[in-house]
Length: 396
Ligand code: GLA
Image 1 (cartoon, rainbow, N blue to C red):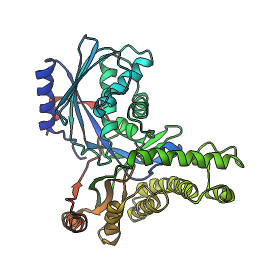
Image 2 (image 1 turned 180 degrees about the vertical axis):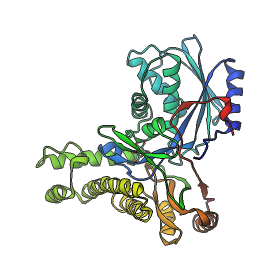
Image 3 (image 1 turned 120 degrees about the vertical axis):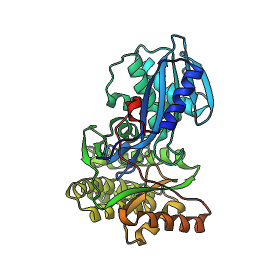
Image 4 (image 1 turned 60 degrees about the horizontal axis):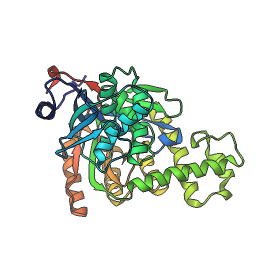
């Protein structure tokens, strides 16, 4: 069992800032980012995903302030913002919207929340596709739940975070990121049915292999608008299918057979998007079995197939990500790789032979730099527990 370790430096900075700006007494929590082994863009189609929370995340100190204000400080942006607890509209500062959004949604649910202070800082590289925004939404939800004794469970808090993303950040995301960050378990991934929200933990045992992330360090500006556009395309696909198959409520209920039967109704683009989603749901089911049986080669091939579906049918990849997955495909010590998250940049997830990991990282950095003149970053993440309180004993 790998011990969870926290960043002493970050948590100390958060504590210090809180004392400097607000008060001596506060709670301290850790809210993780996430990886996703397989099941991409399936969450908002009521399908299946296989994410896990990681040991990179957000450290957050929080307390009530008995004022009618929300006082927030971001260490990463070195910026403070004070808002009235009556504020309803999103503000110009994006990081603040994740906190404000969660607060406002809880208040709109007629839950008794009032003024509070929050200082946070994290080690999830922004724009890397590791869900720093979900980690922050969950941090806010967890803190408010504690402070005002709201008695909300983790799934409800994850849903509140998702709603904040929709209403305060304008991204019509699925539930995967908030769910994984809230409910993660050490050394496990979770397979989630995004329709019923039933889930199971699967031991993340990759044998002589391990997960390595490569951060392309690009984030193409299309990401958010294209994300919402893909969601709309899938919804359009469901409407077209319903003309002959009214029982289809989401692409999760569809099969390649009925899609084929209805083909004449579809544009090529919508057809491809829908067939990608149907195939990806099937891949998650297969990956579940492969991981449980320790069939890692099989799992790896499913990851490659997922990537090329995302790239060639769903069109959410980019040159940098395709290049990294091409390199991985040719590499004898990598058995699977794909882009991860919404796409248009961020990280790839790779299943890499532990023994040769250092060489691989080096080779990838050189090749990526030669091609794009960008310093590739690599991360070896541990699967961690979902958003939780921390105390001083656990620091590294
Ligand atoms: C983003 C969204 C998630 C999910 C992924 C793609 O991370 O926040 O809900 O849709 O993209 O799988």
